[in-house]
Image 1: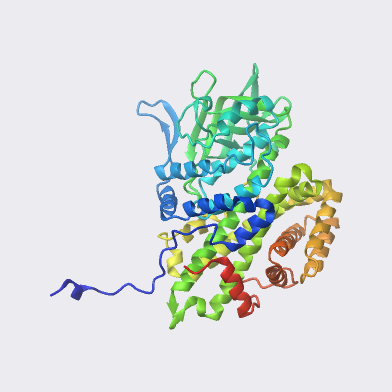
Image 2: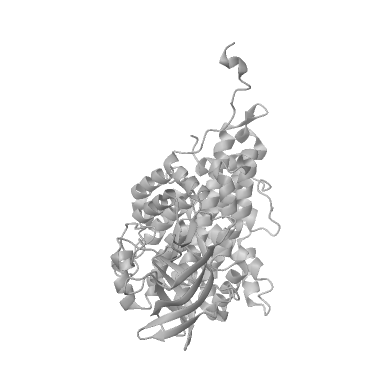
Length: 549
């Protein structure tokens, strides 16, 4: 009897693996958003990046880095403290690729000043594509980039760090940062008793000559193998910011003791630690007693990246769902040919197109803020609003993408289960939803004239769009009322959606009208696929989202 006689079934009608994709060239909304926001000159660079990160090789690196999670080695075989975290080689390769592309430093020049031009938009496009493949390793990447903004408050220290931080080499060696070919910098703010309320921090900073000794703890300090950390501690003058390297000036290991690694829902490739400082050596950064003011410059940039990464996760979810629907047949025709599935996918494509337009518009504001007061005001007001809306949109969106694949989307063999576990973290880190809303209220209160000017510009940019005037009126009334904290979530969500409509209207007005009609009306549909889109409108959205392959 032949071997084929024992075959139980033939495998067919399974969608092919979604890999070997140009993550840039296959994404028309991204290409157009990059072009409109002054970075069209970078297309060749971004296409090369998109091909590299869209390869099967990089997808496998992402899988391996998350299946083989970091391990803390607290002691060596002789009982001596080691305090090192071991990562799978795939993690180091992801880090190396991101460093080589300059995602950790390309928005700065060699002196730590803004690189100018469209460097924020170009970098954001890379960050957006990398997030579609593996998000965990981007935590130390974003902190390293953002650290320069805080270190600017201590110019002498920044001048020492930049020759190493400015390198595009990734160096995983456990050695003093001064002796390395490249470096990464992390951040430690939250403590057990305070969390978001960092003013309640109890960690102490005791002066020791020109340096300080830090005694205390951090409850959540990610990327513990960074070469240095910016931490908050209470000095005599009040809460202050400090630069804490892994090694002391004499070359010995600094007194940083990791207690354990967090067992997180997602973000598994990235180690997050609980740590104690037993007299750790540190240098002051910025004015004593003004630590929050110093480190918030860093936080502003990490919040920006949270929004970009969440948009990237949604883009990946859409691409996998659309690819599957084009190849999977149900009831004698492809899923994509069923009008109900078209409606779902088109509605999702509209959400992604608006989100990428919005985050790239925000990055344009970061590029232009140093020499344009309106762009600076947009950056300050819209960063927390964009983080709030985009990051909170990602978890339900990725779930919907999983549902498009059915059971194949729910298993860990594919990437969507990992994306689903990853999606909530960006809304939590760097300030949760309520904190973002309060920051928007604070920005409107402190700079009411600038905030009003931003709102007026959004009104102009959404002129003629369905629901635009009503949305702008709602936002204005909400900010002016005495108890504006009570309705802050509605106001901030509406502000973000109004800004998304404005950003998309600059790039693709027909789809901006679809977004406004389905998101800015008084009672918008709450489920993907419930928006009333015509077959022609659905085809337009899906054709732009991903070419057939």
